[in-house]
Image (cartoon, rainbow, N blue to C red; front, side):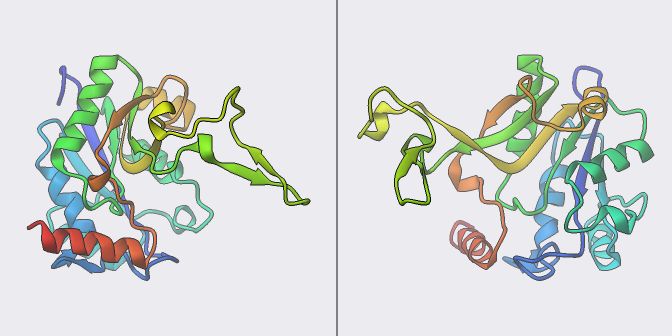
Length: 229
């Protein structure tokens, strides 16, 4: 609870995965991938209730073993490759009423720590914004990115009066890292997205901002855990 408002955290984890087979329950540094997110969320000083939404019984069983509540089984039509990511969240909110804020924690961000979760919630409160998401400074600046036409000519994605050759001369730019999403529930149900011009940003360091999408990401995160323990 924060400012007398109740906080619900949701971990979405479906069984299908193309980049890494069964990645949500594959062992990373000695425990299932999903366990890292469950453990970080359970240490939060603001989260009142933590639930999992999944259609996969094996994922559900493992989550329960790590003391994560599973109050319902997600409908299979909300666990397809083409299912928008917001749909399982909205479905969960329909089934779990009487909360003020929701925190979405994707299990593919195992390097995210409890402090990141709580800092993102705090940022939402400090900015008085209806939503806050975690970001990290982009490795490649869009000011140095181009499209290439059929004739092989380059066109800058962002038009500039003068080309900047030094990175320090460019504006800082940030990208979503997928680690933490927080929103006012009434606002989210109305807008059906965490991302609008009203959304604020919590900036995370790059070394905690890896989102596992393929085998290379998985191997890197495992290396980080094994070498920073």
